[in-house]
Length: 304
Image (cartoon, rainbow, N blue to C red; front, side, top):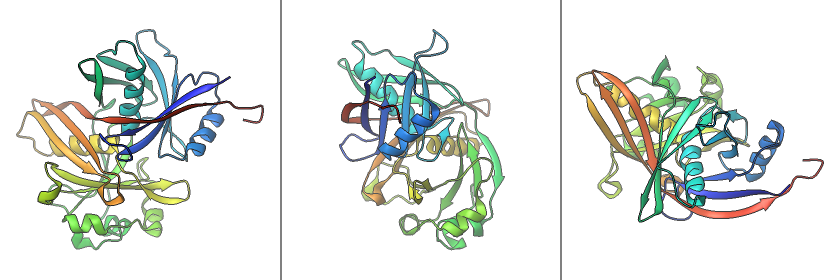
């Protein structure tokens, strides 16, 4: 059976920016082992597999794989998969519903003059604030000093809205640029509360990188050691929710424009919205643009 795939760059409006994603269409009949092997073959940070929904009211079952494992939820795979499906539709729906291991994920489709221009997912789970990690240990994971880590708003902490990350604020854009993953420190720190990755950000955004409100980076295990992700929607969603949660006096909507990937040559822009009512976060959203890159087909033989 020929299986079609489309690749997109996610959270960018230009080719070769953002985070690449492979979307495998017509994935019915593939085993988990085959999906993992196909993901390894693409060698992107994630690949998605689109299957018929279990419930007729939903649009698709979406399974998400990294090169190492299947994960319950991720941000750029939802934004990119929704973009692919919406652009393939004769008349794009206003919202798609994806069944994922973390829960039901709605993704809104933004169109202009009938053309899909962006998509925005809603996080499937409320914000979870879990274990704290010492400043020294968090800094070591980033090859930074303890003085490079800020704690005036929050200590280094594992957070999740469907997939867990260690969130760390660093003091300056220079420290963000200087960071490098340290394998020995990662091995001492992770796994922790289901997390194996560090998402770190700074409020120190130079004029040349505005209108971003924050700049961020993310280190995680890749196919051959630690690597960097150019745009991490699930971690961005959790971080935006954390920042909204930290101010108990403000209700309404917190909007943040978060840049990522600049220091690795794949600039990304992630647009976040967090709704808060009566001091409680009611919804968490992250969206952005995508660029279609490649498409083709593949066939698995009897050894696949």
